[in-house]
Length: 414
Image (cartoon, rainbow, N blue to C red; front, top):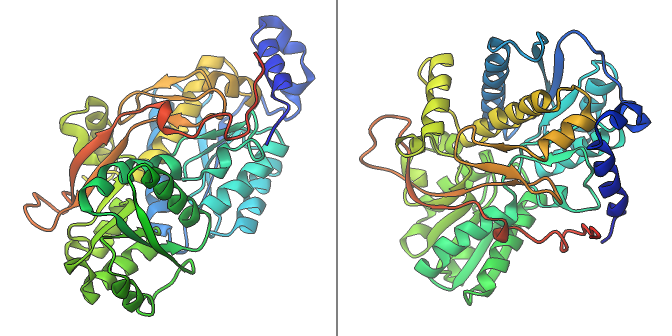
């Protein structure tokens, strides 16, 4: 894949030329009001299989907006968060995003919780030159065919997440692997990430068994998995699917002979599924509140969330909602502007530490370079209902763990 990135580079150079920016018609192709609130659209699946994660995204995003407004906003302009239910449907997500841009006149869009919906949201924003900061895992959104100057990806991506879990778990638990995979982009990309990392480790894929999104019954798959006698079973699914499959794998007795892992071990899923269903399952996450003992930014974020929400702690995807909003609003201040082009330029230069350690956006694709936390679900020795994971390792932020810019199709001439 190739794109006309030399012209993109020239545009970035032009935008850095000070007063010349004001004369560029590109800047104001999606002009917004210069007074009144800074509006951020926030499409996310408030209903459906990922609703618990979406609700936490909203709570944390609202906290970021509250902090920005309490600090005076930008030149007295406060922020307003416009939350919309995308119903976990790409068409609905596109419709809601278009309404946010054309009817509600939002300045920026942050959100999404599905690999499929985020691509439709991004397409609408890209075509209208409105900055979109995605807080859902996807490999495709970083690829040149879907990318634009206005496309940012705050979340981990499947290549990074699955790779980190594979590098931790595969050498410890055996060579033979079966994947139980949600049959959509998230699941497919996670499997690809595991398999690529596993090549260097001599891993053998026995089967990639796919199930529909939102499946309630996994009993038809479990006898086949057991008959294959894998060393490792990877649950490549999310939200309610992860809860249901973990419960049924446990009830069927597969854990007696097979180590169960998952690329994203969700805090909300563990809370919903309970200690027994998730006992011993290992996975990756972008954030766990228990990191606060060693990371000051995590402690500050957790304390603010506790104060706002009656002592509750933020989830992993909640933290992404917080960071996705906070980064955009900081870029507004850094750019001294509210138009998407100038804010995009400022955002791609941002170095930040909102809740988990140092992060920055890679220049070629605007992927947030960040750590991956490897956790194991607890079933005993829990201090309280929030104490559900043990942190096993943290893979440090490193661009080398991402797919290369060239592989993604970003051809930038020197």
